[in-house]
Image 1 (tube, rainbow, N blue to C red):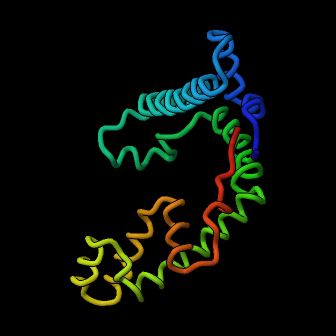
Image 2: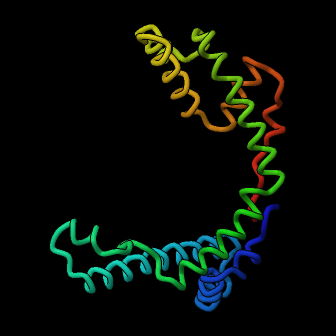
Image 3: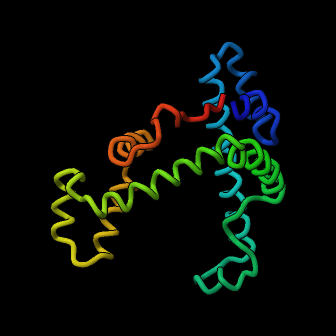
Length: 183
């Protein structure tokens, strides 16, 4: 588990969202509680940006796009307090999720899988689905062929990519690449 919902509920802005949900719906189940709190969180972010933009536009009263470019500040932005709170949330997410050792290792493994699938499909396009093989036949040059291969891989789900790798390249067990739950 990377982090718990209770830990999320201690972060700035989110603390108020969870508190409000708990006040309005004291018996809400775990998943609905988290969903409702996050819905409120994203709503508050949108409202903040709209409010700041509205105030900024009132201050500069632009008549043209050039007036906005000359404003000397971003019109579409978070308010300073929300921006500071988001820094705390961003730091939490980077340390607990994006840079967590389990996630970093999974990213390494997924990168390896993709790096091995790409040349495989370029060398063995007969293993592509029928509609993709037609595109390969019509490809004009290596760049277009590479684009077709990368588009095919980009459209794969994680699970499907792992299954293809196991089937065509070997060396990785798809069940070993489980997702890391966020409670």
